[in-house]
Length: 143
Image (cartoon, rainbow, N blue to C red):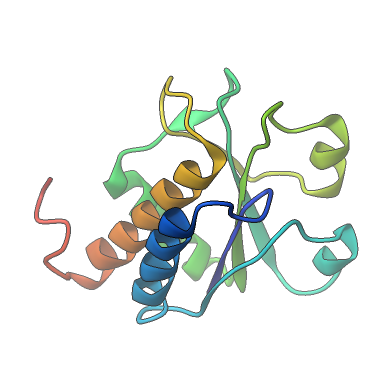
Protein backbone atom coordinates (compact mmCIF):
# COMPACT_ATOMS: atom_id res chain seq x y z
CA UNK A 1 0.00 0.00 0.00
CA UNK A 2 1.37 3.38 -0.97
CA UNK A 3 0.79 6.32 1.39
CA UNK A 4 0.53 9.82 -0.01
CA UNK A 5 0.05 12.77 2.31
CA UNK A 6 -1.47 15.56 0.26
CA UNK A 7 -1.33 19.05 1.75
CA UNK A 8 -3.87 21.52 0.42
CA UNK A 9 -1.18 24.10 -0.34
CA UNK A 10 2.57 24.49 -0.64
CA UNK A 11 4.43 24.78 2.65
CA UNK A 12 5.58 28.26 3.61
CA UNK A 13 7.50 27.24 6.74
CA UNK A 14 10.83 25.54 6.10
CA UNK A 15 10.82 24.18 9.65
CA UNK A 16 7.44 22.52 9.24
CA UNK A 17 8.39 21.19 5.81
CA UNK A 18 11.50 19.68 7.39
CA UNK A 19 9.41 17.94 10.06
CA UNK A 20 7.08 16.55 7.40
CA UNK A 21 10.00 15.34 5.29
CA UNK A 22 11.39 13.60 8.38
CA UNK A 23 8.16 11.70 8.99
CA UNK A 24 7.77 10.93 5.28
CA UNK A 25 11.26 9.41 5.35
CA UNK A 26 10.34 7.31 8.38
CA UNK A 27 7.09 6.15 6.76
CA UNK A 28 9.03 5.21 3.61
CA UNK A 29 10.82 2.51 5.63
CA UNK A 30 7.45 0.73 5.82
CA UNK A 31 5.72 1.80 2.59
CA UNK A 32 6.27 4.23 -0.28
CA UNK A 33 5.37 7.76 0.78
CA UNK A 34 5.22 11.04 -1.06
CA UNK A 35 4.04 14.52 -0.18
CA UNK A 36 2.31 16.43 -2.94
CA UNK A 37 0.09 19.38 -3.57
CA UNK A 38 -3.54 19.29 -4.59
CA UNK A 39 -4.21 16.49 -7.10
CA UNK A 40 -6.41 16.61 -10.15
CA UNK A 41 -9.61 14.52 -10.18
CA UNK A 42 -8.30 12.63 -13.23
CA UNK A 43 -5.53 11.15 -11.04
CA UNK A 44 -8.17 9.04 -9.29
CA UNK A 45 -9.44 7.18 -12.33
CA UNK A 46 -7.20 4.12 -12.03
CA UNK A 47 -6.05 1.90 -9.20
CA UNK A 48 -7.63 1.22 -5.85
CA UNK A 49 -7.27 4.37 -3.79
CA UNK A 50 -8.68 5.37 -0.44
CA UNK A 51 -9.04 8.95 0.71
CA UNK A 52 -9.01 10.20 4.29
CA UNK A 53 -9.84 13.83 5.01
CA UNK A 54 -8.33 15.62 8.00
CA UNK A 55 -11.40 17.61 8.85
CA UNK A 56 -12.93 19.59 11.72
CA UNK A 57 -16.50 19.04 10.49
CA UNK A 58 -18.94 17.68 13.08
CA UNK A 59 -19.13 14.33 11.29
CA UNK A 60 -15.34 13.86 11.41
CA UNK A 61 -14.05 11.12 13.69
CA UNK A 62 -11.31 11.33 16.28
CA UNK A 63 -9.12 8.23 16.25
CA UNK A 64 -6.78 6.79 18.84
CA UNK A 65 -3.42 5.82 17.36
CA UNK A 66 -4.29 2.14 17.71
CA UNK A 67 -7.51 2.65 15.77
CA UNK A 68 -5.62 4.47 13.01
CA UNK A 69 -3.31 1.44 12.80
CA UNK A 70 -6.27 -0.96 12.59
CA UNK A 71 -7.86 1.09 9.79
CA UNK A 72 -4.58 1.13 7.87
CA UNK A 73 -4.29 -2.62 8.32
CA UNK A 74 -7.81 -3.04 6.91
CA UNK A 75 -6.78 -0.92 3.90
CA UNK A 76 -3.88 -3.26 3.31
CA UNK A 77 -6.07 -6.38 3.60
CA UNK A 78 -8.62 -4.80 1.24
CA UNK A 79 -5.90 -4.43 -1.42
CA UNK A 80 -5.96 -0.63 -1.24
CA UNK A 81 -2.99 0.38 -3.38
CA UNK A 82 -2.82 3.97 -2.24
CA UNK A 83 -4.01 5.88 0.81
CA UNK A 84 -4.29 9.62 0.25
CA UNK A 85 -4.68 12.00 3.14
CA UNK A 86 -6.10 15.43 2.42
CA UNK A 87 -5.73 18.38 4.77
CA UNK A 88 -8.66 20.79 4.67
CA UNK A 89 -8.15 24.39 3.60
CA UNK A 90 -9.02 27.46 5.70
CA UNK A 91 -12.69 26.97 4.83
CA UNK A 92 -12.63 23.17 5.09
CA UNK A 93 -13.70 21.07 2.13
CA UNK A 94 -16.07 22.23 -0.57
CA UNK A 95 -18.98 20.41 -2.19
CA UNK A 96 -16.78 20.10 -5.29
CA UNK A 97 -14.07 18.44 -3.18
CA UNK A 98 -16.73 16.00 -1.96
CA UNK A 99 -17.59 15.11 -5.57
CA UNK A 100 -14.01 14.96 -6.84
CA UNK A 101 -12.41 13.25 -3.84
CA UNK A 102 -15.06 11.48 -1.75
CA UNK A 103 -13.55 10.49 1.60
CA UNK A 104 -13.73 7.00 3.08
CA UNK A 105 -12.92 8.61 6.43
CA UNK A 106 -13.24 12.09 7.87
CA UNK A 107 -10.42 12.13 10.40
CA UNK A 108 -10.45 14.69 13.20
CA UNK A 109 -7.62 15.69 15.52
CA UNK A 110 -10.24 16.86 18.01
CA UNK A 111 -11.66 20.33 18.51
CA UNK A 112 -8.29 22.00 17.94
CA UNK A 113 -7.82 24.44 15.10
CA UNK A 114 -4.41 23.74 13.60
CA UNK A 115 -2.53 25.54 10.83
CA UNK A 116 -2.61 23.43 7.64
CA UNK A 117 1.09 22.74 7.77
CA UNK A 118 0.99 21.55 11.36
CA UNK A 119 -2.08 19.37 10.65
CA UNK A 120 -0.10 17.74 7.84
CA UNK A 121 2.78 17.00 10.23
CA UNK A 122 0.36 15.59 12.83
CA UNK A 123 -1.21 13.35 10.18
CA UNK A 124 2.23 12.15 9.03
CA UNK A 125 3.30 11.43 12.61
CA UNK A 126 0.11 9.43 13.21
CA UNK A 127 0.62 7.43 10.01
CA UNK A 128 4.20 6.70 11.07
CA UNK A 129 3.00 5.76 14.57
CA UNK A 130 0.37 3.46 13.03
CA UNK A 131 3.01 1.70 10.95
CA UNK A 132 5.21 1.21 14.02
CA UNK A 133 2.26 -0.29 15.89
CA UNK A 134 1.54 -2.67 13.01
CA UNK A 135 5.18 -3.73 12.75
CA UNK A 136 5.80 -4.07 16.51
CA UNK A 137 8.35 -1.24 16.51
CA UNK A 138 8.97 0.32 19.96
CA UNK A 139 8.24 3.94 18.84
CA UNK A 140 4.68 3.96 20.22
CA UNK A 141 5.61 2.40 23.54
CA UNK A 142 2.03 2.56 24.81
CA UNK A 143 1.88 6.37 24.89
